[in-house]
Length: 371
Image (cartoon, rainbow, N blue to C red; front, side):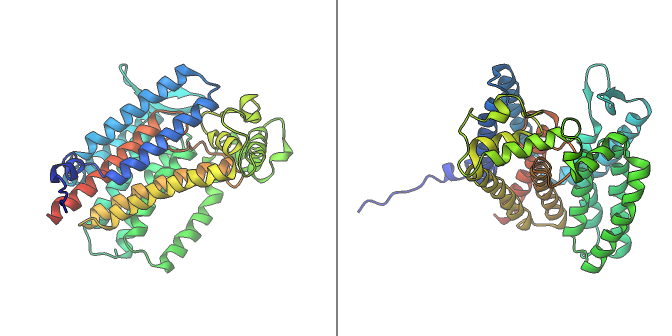
């Protein structure tokens, strides 16, 4: 009987280009589902599809490039990225560009960008770098300073105002601290402090339209043709999908344009109406696969910095999914968080894929050190 041999060069191809095959497959499948859904949600707008395809391609290039750097590069630049991001956030508050009632952008003449997107990576990098310098689990003093590193940029971004991004940034930093080994007693104390801080946010940080979002979340039927219209139509779309859905391009809420923002924040409602509970479970399975793969990569990392940073990036991706699905289902207030790699958009997609590039670098580090 002839024995077949496997070419080791083929096996090591992904390792040589510093790519985790399983994670790449999950991201490609999710991106394909996103393009498929966006075609329907956009009303078959080919121009919008082309723009999304270009953004996806650019995001994957960013992921590939960042995966090539040794993890020591990210460790070295953690403090520089964090301090630089803070300075840019302060600059935004002083002379940032206005848009849609918010002051979130810096205009440098040749480029206009949101510094808050940089902090989605800079904050977990900084917290992971600081916490990993000490013996784990960290002492209370180190945890307090770690929280301070998270709170400062969170408040600066909340004042722009941008509650959605501030929530994601706060989560990314808190996850790094939590994974370092916080006691449940300390977690309870932090939870109580967050609860005590809620009135401060309500009276001093939140704008009137943000307060209205919370009130609408509690009772959307109080203003069905105004502030409650989005969430009411979204819940109708999700519920009308049933078990098997109405079929691709057959959703009445989306195709007849009853559902606002159907190609961005509320694209999950379009997907639910057309593919039903069965499709939603498949989509959740794809997200779960990516999240589990990210956690596996983080758990196998060789040092504390890599473990904390990888786990934080992965769990922040989970927050994206959880918050978007929760807000369009009426389980959470609407805060403007996109559905990762499915919603139409550019900046947040690039940031997400940059995070996965760092995860790829962590996976590469693990393989190189195990040789």
